[in-house]
Amino acid sequence: MPFGSFGFPELLLFFLLVLLLFGAKRIPEVGRSLGKGIREFKSATKELRKSVDEVEEEEKEKPSPSQKERDGEPVERKSDRGEN
Image 1 (tube, rainbow, N blue to C red):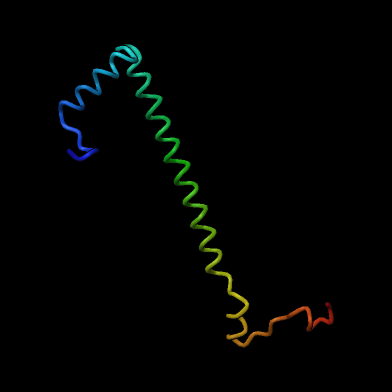
Image 2: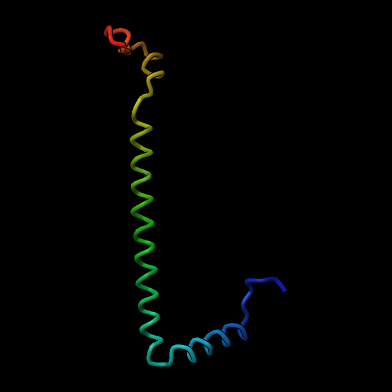
């Protein structure tokens, strides 16, 4: 029997255990708090992904020094300014 496949008997047993542990009055409260936590996690994940995508886009837009040299633009180095 592979792990992770839940049938009707397993789900029924799970719900009965939840009912015994939390009671009928607390199940809606637990469900609401669980849903709120999932929404907050999704929101934080979206914000993180958005910020990572923005940084990646900024990095793509910045030309690398080797690209400037290939384009024929002069690249100023410390040795060109007389600094060590």
